[in-house]
Amino acid sequence: MKMQTRSFLRGLAATVPLALAFLLAILTQIPVGSATAGIPAPNWTLMLVFYFSIHRPTLVPPIAVALVGLFQDFLWGGPPGLNLLILLITQMVLSNQQALFVRRPFLVGWLGFVTVAAIAMALSWLAGSLYYGEILGLRPLAVQTALSVVAYPVAGWVFGRIDGMLGR
Amino acid sequence: MPLLGSRHGRWIFAGLVALALLFLVLGRIEHPWVHALRGAAADISRPVLEAAARPLEGFDRIANWARAVTRLAAENVRLREENARLQRWRATALLLERENHRLRTLLNAPQFTTLRIATPRVIGVAGGPFVRSILIDAGRADGVRRDQAVVDELGLVGRVVDVGAHAARVLLVTDLNSRVPVRVLERDALAIARGRNEPLLDLAFLPPDVTPEVGDLVVTSGDGGVFAPDIPVGRILTVGDDLVTVEPAALLERLDFVQVLERVPDALDRSNGKTTGEKATP
Image 1: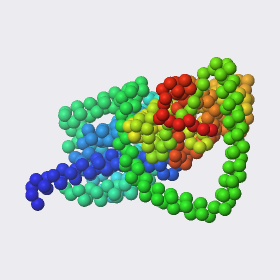
Image 2: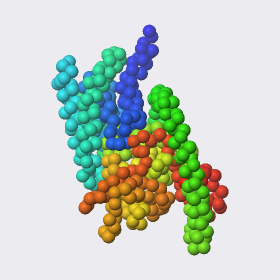
Image 3: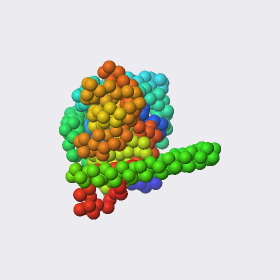
Image 4: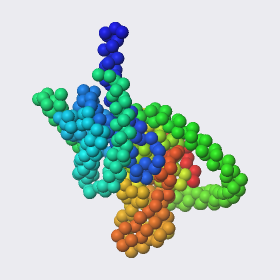
């Protein structure tokens, strides 16, 4: 294969995590179950940013992560900038913690995600309450966090397969 | 390289945090840019959501067909009875409409017509924890505008808040930011139905001398000009010392198709020869 073709394919592969992040942000809106009754979807983009910030940080540059967060904010109709902030802080927290999670048992990664999801929940609640000017109920956020924590093993496995397919 | 490992990285991070704060401020002051960007995001997600919903629609259709077949005979009897009942109500409604029109003309009161702008499908729901909203597959191109009322076959669903070219976002009556001027029909009392990000609404600013009862019907009052009057909002579910809750009439958990309505003064309707909507019938 020609050098140019190879570098083009490598460049294309590098966009896969972010394209997937945009797709997941859209797919969280599929009207399944009873989402309008107050059961939010798991935060798939947080899971993706968590996984790739640890295993392939070069594929999730901060500017692209910020765009994903902002797009999600506009899709969800909530405080614009909130998801941007949460995803950036997640990246910041993980920026020098790769050694803690890489080549460690899956449980370690999962516990790391539980910690990050809890921090994200607390920050979202605080920023949301300040934005709306009233103390918001914690239940919807707690439900979303719990769903995200439960879904992470499956999401992490899928991201791991994608990561493997992208090559180094 | 760690995100904050270099000076360059730290500047980028600080710039992005500043951008987030700027958008939070713009959102708080309801800047038109924010609404425009939300409308654009709805437009972008529309084709993906429609494509993703197609396989689910197939399953849905099969399940509905199987359900319909098993209930066909009973359903037929029920529909015949309902049809006869609705025919009687239609005659009564036409009589009352004529009488209402005559009395309004005598009083020289302004008259409004509720136009049905579109009957879109619900293609998405807000996945976030703070907002109760839905996405519909109709936008500016279909005549949908901000603040139009949205109903299902049973009652008020919400109002349009962000509009794209071919999709729009509807804030549900149960959202924390939703405030609907209402009338408790049996008590003829005005109040505000507030969303709480919970399945039920609560009634605020109810006059202190009014004691509503469980089961009382709550309808839009028409005050404020956004919602046409007399759209069913729900029924009172509980009456406490400090809290009166209302169960929404619309099937908010199973929304499929909805109607977008606009209230226009009759004179304006005639002079503009507006043809984007058709008159909504009760």
